[in-house]
Image (cartoon, rainbow, N blue to C red):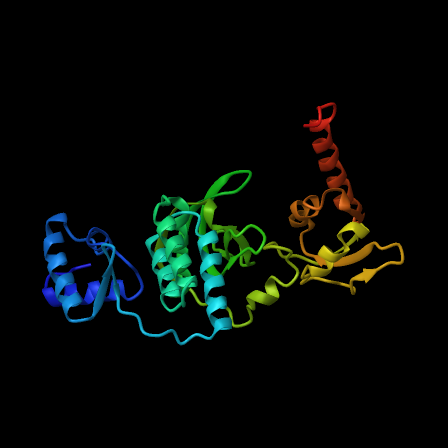
Length: 317
């Protein structure tokens, strides 16, 4: 950012403090100024404070607040969005931080205070490959440019030239995925995990997203992020967890949830890739039985036997 005049620097400072609370040192760092320019920044801050544009609280500056225009339900929705973004953004990225600060800006107390505290915690996170991949993927998608990288799958690392049609955060593991076409391997959209993209770069080549591509339809059978032809999965939950099962939201039900006379709850799902179901089913321990498909039942039984073997013969605490 070229900030070679006082006017530009003051405007940049005001823009930053519109959403964030920063010390003078943080302002210098986030505006990519030299350390010797810190004294000038402090002078600008003093002038802005005297003009009533900003305020200083315990050494941290911020734009003077206007009363929030959000009603309580809207404020809670914005706060929840900020918390979800905080949990998703595992590594530091200055664009994520700016988004978190924008979300926190108009929140009423005490939600704004908690959101601001979370932002301070987020600043301590270290950036890495995932942050870079997310940034490059975002630009590739929004600018319609091909993303190039080395993609590390479970079996190999291979070149990828990706036309991104959609970016989705999985509701199950909060990882970010790109849906798109690899120019090196046909024209069928596939799923690519951003964390597995090594050395991503933007190509000058452009593309258009087909008009008939509907991302939510593409993902309609996915339990998390993996689509496919829906497979019937039948589960029986014990009476002990009937209330918990009733509180679950199942987006892929094939039949209505049924409470049996025995007290068990029968749930029938249509899932594109049942392997994504495994961690969720295992999280219920012995309170759920897989009736079908037999392959899933076998996988769950094997995992439970392996877990039980770890504790066989161990003394209770």
